[in-house]
Amino acid sequence: MPDDKTKAIISKLFYVGRENGSCRTFGWEEPEITPFDKEELELAAKKMKNSKAPGLDGVPPEVIKEIGKTNSDWILGVMNDQLRKRSQK
Image (cartoon, rainbow, N blue to C red; front, side, top):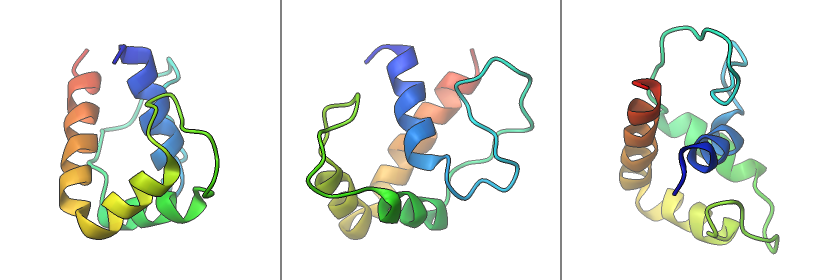
């Protein structure tokens, strides 16, 4: 997946709940990057609407919501790994 797509996906899913409102796709200098937590995952999942077209990643919202319920540690690991990789560039 191209870098820009990954950034857009992560920002869309996890923009909710960030106290400082920082969005990782903009070019300004950002505060220290903190890993996503389960609360942010739950907020993002609640915001997603069922029966909508998949996002840039091609994964339908229902799948992301179900993974968040059944295997939240795994999806948090994937998202935080991507966040770390992208923030090092």
